[in-house]
Image 1 (tube, rainbow, N blue to C red):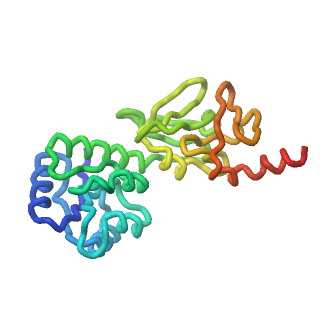
Image 2 (cartoon, one colour; image 1 turned 120 degrees about the vertical axis):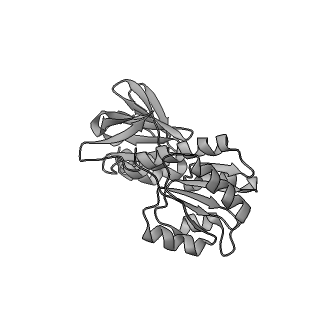
Image 3 (cartoon, rainbow, N blue to C red; image 1 turned 45 degrees about the vertical axis):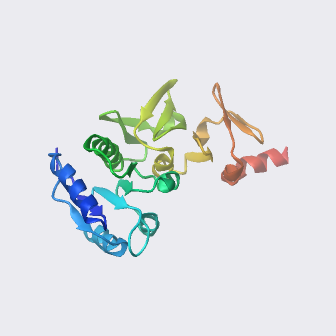
Length: 233
């Protein structure tokens, strides 16, 4: 197993020391890079291949969430904060976990496991016909033509393929970015469908085999071609 490079962005010395001590107990981490401002963190992220980011919310120059917004492709991120009020908003940025201070070593380890699963998944290998995705502790190859649709499942997603259901260690937002748009379209907050597998469509639902997939109002524009055909008939 290779070692992972962490970056700790924390302006509280006590919180930084605790997190550093916890990381030293884990055998697969390099000595962490550290800084106490968001601007410095952005500079470090540009110059180093950081594998996992520990990010405080309240920083002197900008918030941790503003940092994530400014960073086009952040590494798997664990938010560390005393304030629970940003927890829901933070998951809009596809963070691995949200740790409330003070947190235990066991709780931090669980967050690290989630982040490392995302890090492996982010290196999924895709080609013109399929993609490798992490399933449990293994990488599994999925042929694009075999996937009927994808359903959100918390911090995971369900792949419906070959009359099977496989849970993969990726969020639906992550899969929306990775699956080729020539085949796959997000039609609802919880669903991505393979356009080639659509059997019928009306103004509210898509029929995918035995499944009826609802169409979200905010995603209707992604199906303009289908609406055009419906209006002509």
